Image (cartoon, rainbow over all chains, first blue to last red):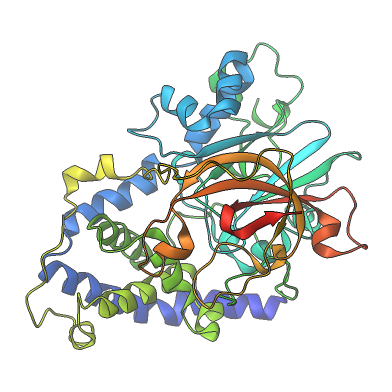
Length: 211
Length: 218
């Protein structure tokens, strides 16, 4: 996308569209509340939960635990919904969560080409790029090109496996534990786990980046 | 539905542009739109695939030029009007002009913490799974005008069953009000070359989650 188009989209989403949408959504909320369908106080709690409680820090704790505890890692690969629920990070974990493991030979990448399916409970709401046409169109036929957009080059000999989330199964990537982290606590390991490395568009940080 | 939402493999959309320190919501109305969707979903008036179909039915030019949450807001308005829960005149005036209908339940602030996780889409099966891991299958060449979760790029292609994911609600029927009609769900793995031709990176592998009615033995 050229610079001009990008600027155009930016002003479209955040400038002129803002006031139109602000008014339109306010009208919708008012009508629904007056008709007794929704309670605006519940909306406040939902927004607060997704802005503060439900985000990639949950997924990072899951990955750090898997890096530290082989029994947990086996449980995670076996049934990620159950394993994540056992950590007690969330009130309830939804079904059908699947963890897919990166190896020196295989790098996994998650996409939803049809809409925006994403493991909300462990990663929060998806970023704009995940829901965008460039990512959804290219992840399935040019994953190395997509990785290049993120500044990521995989070591030679690493094949890419793309998972298109076309049903209610949800995927989280279990990246490889970075070298040089022997003896690190789970808490410290979690600081290496980025959101993007759990989607497969990034790699964990290097130990040197957080020390 | 062969719409613009079915983007896998399309060209010309440019580079992926990650945003540094991206906020969860870019404007107040985005958060409200998201939360209204959740609250209305809680009342049980629609299934997740009816809402997906609601986005897919937006006109292509609107779909491609709208931000994500603008699509959600437009979809909400359309579905609510279609279901007779609000009138277009009410959306225009910004106030209720008639009393609301009685819905099954209403989300309160106290309910929210326990309503945030996804439900289960597993259902009892009425027949054994037709395929097992390792079976070669061909996806059907289907083009329903209504909602489906078989992407265009993976139709009429040969792949291998990698895993059985259980028996799940079938999107193609729930989306059009024809019931849950549970079907076996499989992870089907394709060689990149089977999907994209000989010039493709020979190491690429792509999987989809495919419902049994999308598949036939190969």
